[in-house]
Image 1 (cartoon, rainbow, N blue to C red):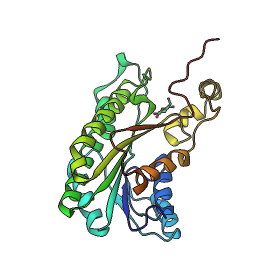
Image 2: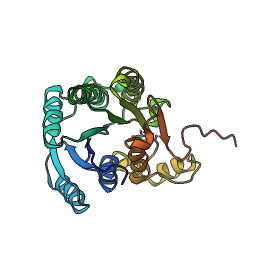
Image 3: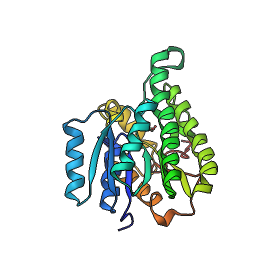
Length: 255
Ligand code: BGC
C-alpha cells in the first residue's frame, strides 16, 4: 500500500471530491483526519466507510476560513495522528453572479473558503511538520479555472488563480523542509457543487460537447491523482498543477 504508516488531513471531506479523496487515501493505507463543516450523519457515514477499510478516522468539524479554528484542528489532528504528513486542501465553494452584481458577502465567502483557508492551513501544517522535524505533502484542489476564465464566477476564478500562486510560492519556501506542494485542477466533475448544472439537460449537453473525452469526470478520477501526489512516488514533484478534466481546458474547435 502506497500510503502505509501515514495520516492525511482532508478538508471538506463530507461529500464530492473530498469524500472520494478521503476514501482513496484510506484505501492506500492512510489514516484520515476528516474535516467537515458539521459533524453530521453524512460525515459519520464517510468515517464508517474509512473504518471499514481498516483505517483510523476522526472527524474534525471546522470552518476552514477561520484561522483560530484551523490552527486548533491541525494541533489536535497532529496529537491524534502523530504520523500526520499529508494535507489536502479540498474545501471550496462557488457563487453564480455576473461581475457587475457580485456582493461583498459572496466575494468574502468565496475568497475566505477557497484561498484564505488553504493559506493558513498550509502555514499551520508546515509549522507542525517543522516542529516534528518531518517531511510532508500538501495537495490543493484547485480548478481548471486557475487558468481559464469562467464568466459569472469572477470571485471563484480570483480564488483559484490565487491558489495557483500560493501553491508555487509555498513549494519554493517549504522545499527546504522536505514539504512538497502541488495543485490538482479538476474540470467538470459530477459533485454537489454542480447540482444546478446536472439538473439542466441542455446545459449539461453543451458542457459535455466541450469535453474531448466525452463525459464529465467522477470524484475517483480526481482522487487517484491526489493519492499519487501524496505518495513517495511523487517525491520529486513540487510547484506544479496537474489537470484532471478530460481535455476540457485546452479544447478549441472551429466548426
Ligand atoms: C467548477 C464547476 C465547473 C467546472 C468546469 C469547476 O471548477 O466548480 O462548477 O462546471 O469547473 O467549468
